[in-house]
Image 1 (cartoon, helix red, strand yellow):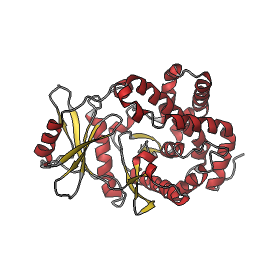
Image 2 (cartoon, rainbow, N blue to C red):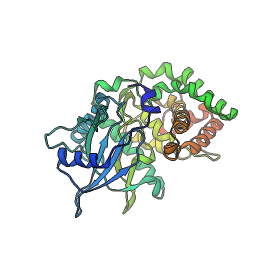
Image 3 (spheres, rainbow, N blue to C red):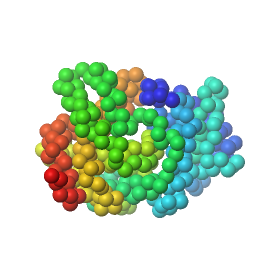
Image 4 (tube, helix red, strand yellow):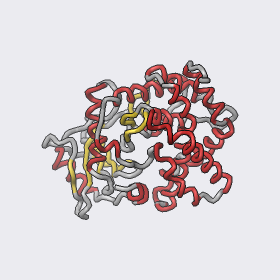
Length: 350
């Protein structure tokens, strides 16, 4: 599997009758079938008649290898044992006992099929935002990273899309940005990543990370919207410096006004309170945040141009990400790093 295959190819549509038959034959489940949104895979909500537990059926992109899918499967099985109270989906084995298997809808393109428990909850973007909720979100991410630190899988070393370690790989996509000011903004952030961060990433603590802890992948309790009730979508997992997970999450907390780091500082501090950050991690955090923002605008814009039918979903974070990137550059790396040091109670190194 290459970046181009997974990022540029839309996942072929599947016949609903075939999907229903798959659920019935392999898991013994029948009921209402509803397609869910997804960046690459085909996802379906299965609701048994008369109520009861609901499930999410995931049919992977045909360009995604079984090894990569198994990475996500094994991670969820590991989390169920390492921290059973983490609000993540559980793998539902097929009737044969397999956690996943290859299937072919008839086009000669095998895909990995898996069934997950369906997590109830309110999508975080639809909930009121509060400082306590934000801190709970950061603590939940730190807890997830702690639970994953003893997990390993051969697919973790594969080159995958959305890996901040490879942020500079999107540089070629910047040529398609029509606005010269925006293009220069993105190029400057990638220049800083290549100069200041990339040479130092290899010495930081590394492990499998979620790698897409954005607000669209989080559920809260409808009765208590400050409580994190669900963590979704492990489809972008990769082995990387653990600080990258915080950088991804923090990129979605950046403000666009005069003080864009006002919300990030307590977010970083809350994460640090559960999984203490090294000074070397804090030093690179701002550069990793802006690199992630560049990846969002570059990859989503490129993909949307090739798949206009899915453009609304692909571009949902694009305008805000540009505004966030511009706001970050107004602050600058040195000032932002000083903010993060203070938030974590770290003294400035000489």
